Length: 141
Image (tube, rainbow, N blue to C red; front, top):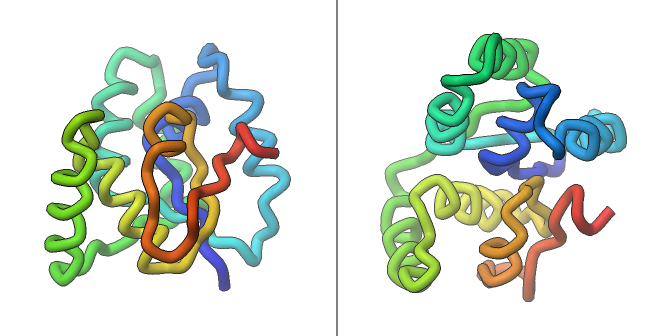
């Protein structure tokens, strides 16, 4: 089964109907076959929960997405910490935050060539180890 890593932005957009990216993110969900496992990281969920604090029902909607297993939560292995450190040091000039580092590392670990993100500015710069660059959804649909 292939994996589509999910960054913070789509998690927020999918939980806030007023977000301009709500419809494009819904479209990514509709177009992603069930054989592709949408997977996020605890760091991205933490960041999304913080950003959804002011959105009525937003945090509960995110819990529902995770509980329905439409978006799986990855268990970051401790063995990933050196790579996270390396990524954050390499992209310190952006700067790369911890949540982005976990999404890039997840993509590398799972061999994913695409990332579900709204953060084109940063994810177009990141260069994963296993592919020359990421395809970004919904931008590259």
